[in-house]
Length: 313
Length: 104
Image 1 (tube, rainbow over the protein chains, first blue to last red):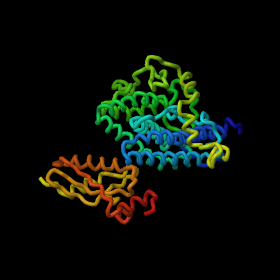
Image 2: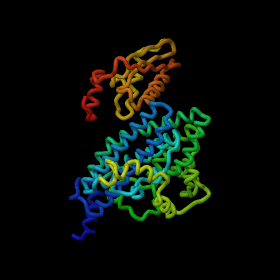
Image 3: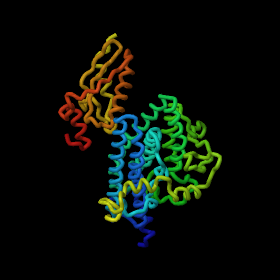
């Protein structure tokens, strides 16, 4: 059988409910797609740790700081699960951690940003972890790769705690009013559009649907964006925080209130809603990575000469 | 109107661990409840002094009790003595944790 025929056959089997259990069941193209999506998941979990760590220093109480530490420890565990699965596919975990340059990690642009106060920390839990749970619960429901699908039971349960932490603190800051509510609004202003972008190209622009055909995920980018907005928009509206999106009764879906995507001012952490850009321009910005990329990855990799450093992997 | 303690206990059964669907009553975290007029008081502990879910659970306890008819004030006392051990789990709590693969 030609490689393309074999791959076609696998796609057909997966469409009929086949569960891939080992490398023997895969085609090279399936394996490649699985490696990419697992790397994105692992890297996203991993880099959230240094991002949250810096912001945990702004926690208002010992208990809330402990809650962030517990979240960080969960996230590192989730990264380990994804990397461990990659090891089964022949990718070295040591290389994943220490062998790559900061710009080669595949986490979303949102996690290359500095989280500079407690409001940004809890909005990260409320928005970024909500994005994570949106993506991963879809994988948990639909994924054709058995070992990953099963590993996500624990991950999903723990992500619920992160979300809960973020959302309850968002409510608390909003209720406090004054400068606390203003800081929350300021955080939402840059982090809401940042997460909208996170879900990637709109369906109409997407050429390759391999991840869907291999059932590495079940929902499209636009569907996932809708799921995310269906939780975050009512949450913010309920606490008097403005977001640039609303529910449209007639269309029965959430609509973004600006021409998506738009230019981002990195220094001001502000979206320039009157300056729409193309997705190609978004990819250029993503590829250049964000301001904290090197800091976060160096923190994970440690001193190159040190005990856990890059030269010893 | 006096709020019956049984009602307070059954309300607290609806407060669950944020990661697992097990109630704080089955976890053995609630040491005692008292009602004085429209005020309700709860003595509770946590499985560890560094429990990351402390704030969330206290919020949940307040929210669920304030919804009871006749309750106007809720006071939560965090108690560390006697310390929590797994012997405080109810039989149902033990079964639940075991079904999640946690050794108890």
